[in-house]
Structures are given as structure tokens and as C-alpha cells.
Image (tube, rainbow, N blue to C red; front, side, top):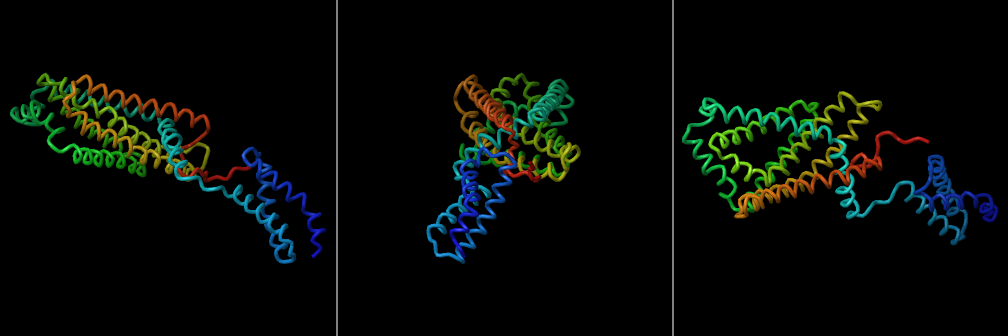
Length: 330
């Protein structure tokens, strides 16, 4: 093989590939297609040179160029810490932010149902009698409700609360495969449990004790549950109304995105569990305990709004794979 003639014929392709590799972050669609095509051609050139020439310098240049082009075409694996940072600054908050109206609707519906049931229990002695005897209600109001938060060691109580809350969150997300239909029932059961306790406490003029104990951890805990329910129902709705894209494509993308919320809520509920185990039963005054809960809630919402809005503007979806099911075309 006449190596000089071979170099003369293909030098322009090699130079062009080198240029495209250096500027790969700013290429348009046509240039990306050209990059892939030249990568395949130069890889073939390298194979030819290796088999028909002893020019070590040329083999070395083409080998390095093909390796760089391969990295540009297939993508390099990001370090683990970058993936960790991206998850908490992009993937998790953008999915939560995109579901904000479902999230708000879930919250308002839960509060409305809780208020109605709580008022019904508080104002009807006959209803209270079907729930428990007067002595049992007195025991609950004066002792059991408050003792629940301090009767176990803080570490074991925190872990138990965390596991329970994480299971509830995962449960409502899993129910998305049934179009989200069971999720309102799960929320109703939780709303009823909270409302019955509130109603019984209110019937004995202990509503201040109820909110003083449940607010520190309950704000963040319930917000996390509402978010899980919101993304679960939103995923279920995707099956019914996928928009202009194919139903399976949208479902796959949104399904992976919802996993971002499932993973992120593990951390959120861990914080809530710590507050419930360490702050709620503590000797701090009520205003301080409630203040800690309000600060935690405000910090979480501000985090979702700030990072979620920024990621949404960057057209992020929260897809864990960051790989759309439909190939882009130029």
C-alpha cells in the first residue's frame, strides 16, 4: 500500500473528525451525524493502516483519534459524585416541580377531607362512642397520644417511623401501575386516621397539644407523602392521556422519572423521621418545636422550586437514564 497516497486522500477526513471531536459540545444535528459517519470511516482507516503499514506514528495518531471519537459518540461515564449531585439538583427536584399541580391538588384534597372528618368526630358524641369508650378517649387524649412519641428509644423509633413512611410513599407510587386508582383510597385512610385523632383531641379541648406534637414532623412527612401520591397519579394519568407521543414511550420515560422521586423521598422521610424522634418528644417549648418543622418544610419547598424550575427551563425530564426512547433527528 502506498501510505503517502493513502494519507493524502484521507487527511481531510481525519482533520475534520478531529475538529468535530474538539467542538462536540456545540455541534448541530447535521454535524453530529457527520461525526458518527467519520468515526466509522476513520476506524476503518485505522484497521487498514494497521494491516498494511508499519508507520507507527500514523497508527498512533489514528488510534488516539478513534478513541477520542468513540468517547464523543458513545459518551463518557460521569464520576459517581457528579451523578449524585445531578440527582439532587436536577432529577429529583424537576420531577417534583413538574408534578406541582397534582401535588397541590392532593394536598388540598387531603386537608379538606381531614377537616370534614375531624369536625364530624369532634362535634358528635355518638360518633366518638363508636370509636372508643369515654375512658379510652380520656386515656388517649391525656396520655397515649403524647406518650407515643417518647415511649421508645429515639434511634429505634426514628428507624421504625422512617421505614413505615417510606413504605407508604413507595406504596402509592407502586399503585401507579393501576392507573393510580388505589392512591386516593390510601390517602383517604391516612386522612381519616389523622382526622379521628384530631377530632378526639378537639372534643376534649386538646387541639393545641395535637398540633404541637404533630406539626414539627407532620409538615415534612405529609408533604412527602403527598408528593409520592401526586407523581403516582400523574404517571397513571399518562397511560390515559400520553399526549402527542406514543403511550409506551411516555410511560417508560415518566416511569423512570418517578423513580427519582421514590429515591429522593427516602432522604426526605429520613429527615422527617429524625424530627419525629428527636424534636417532637423533646423538652423544647412548643413554639421552638413547631418552628423547626416549619423551617424544614420551607427549606424543602424552596429547594424543589429553585432547582426544579431551573431544571425545567433546561428542558430536563428527571429521567434517570437521561436517554429518550425516541431518537432525535436533524
